[in-house]
Amino acid sequence: MSALDLARPEIRALAPYSSARMESSGGSVFLDANESAYPPFADRANWNRYPDPQPEALLQRLAGLYGVAVDRVLAGRGSDEGIDLLVRAFCRAGRDAILISPPTFGMYAVCARVQDADVVEVPLRDDFTLDIQAVIAAWTPAVKLVFVCAPNNPSGGGVPRSDIVRLAEALAERAIVVADQAYVEFADDPGVVDVAGEIENLVVLRTLSKAWALAGVRLGALVAAPQVVALLRKIMPPYPLPRPTTEAVLRALAPDRQIRTAARIAEAVDERERMRAALATLAGVQCVLPSAANFLTVRFADPERAFATLHEAGIVVRDVRRYPRLGDALRITIGSPADNRRVLDVLSRAGDPRPESRARMGAVG
Ligand SMILES: *Cc1c(COP(=O)(O)O)cnc(C)c1O
Image (cartoon, rainbow, N blue to C red; front, top):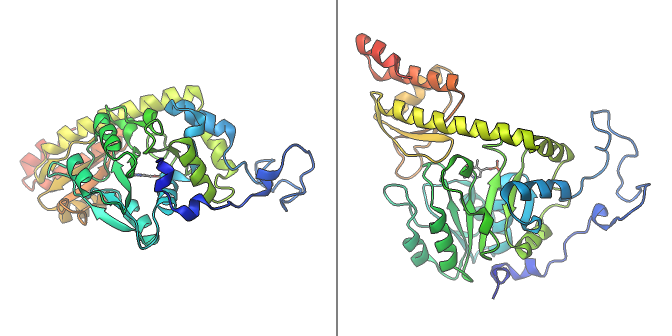
């Protein structure tokens, strides 16, 4: 039994589309892919040519960043593509299921519904920690993928590395555990990317959209056993990675920029803790959930009013009240120090109508 036995048989048997770029080798005159013979009237000389489906230099750079072997890395258009590929490869329509722990990231359930896979829900505990025993107990043979969002969006809490490993080991040969670690750069816990694929049924999703400031570039990495990477590549479109994306990522992951990025992450973590303490003192704030990510989820006495007040001041935050047990909460991303001061300033004025304490609260932060 291997992790591949959990995949859809028709996908395992699928002969993938073979693109011109995959079949070509050598040569200097390329008349095999119906490309233009000329560079576009745009910046880059090679944009008339289809890109390498998985450029080696990009995979090497990502493998180095995450400290894993290069054959464990699948590069895609954000983690969102990884989620979609996993659901399509492992869940048979109308028969199989994924398991999620709400309140959590919405894309897992959306991708499952598109595939007509069922969604089994095992809620987080009241303190928003993952109930591993309940997840294991809820497993049925229909459940092929168990999504663990760590740190979790929208509640912000982490899942310790040892718990993710324990869960994957408990579900060995029964389900793929997908650890979505989009925010792990902001957490103390190192995450589990180093054991993704070593534990064969553990898949890790990482992204450059958050800590690496590249949301607009669209690049996510799926780290898994080589046979799982190979399976997913079969159903990926032939040219998933635009050349400009790969070029931008290679520039952004240059060693000197990695050092600067680490400093930015440290600043965001400091700001998060400062904001958490400052928000907790404001009138109108019920509590601020602990966060291992780059956002804070805040319970308000009057969330509607807090949202409107921020909005009137031009500050857009995420209304997460539709999520279970977050009916009074807003999710606020950690911005620049100036952005954060503004949030505190606006909320402190709104939270306390008494003019003398308004002045006092305005001093916070
Ligand atoms: C933002 C986010 C992602 C995002 O991914 P892309 O790499 O931008 O597609 C994935 N998972 C979670 C939990 C997120 O919050």
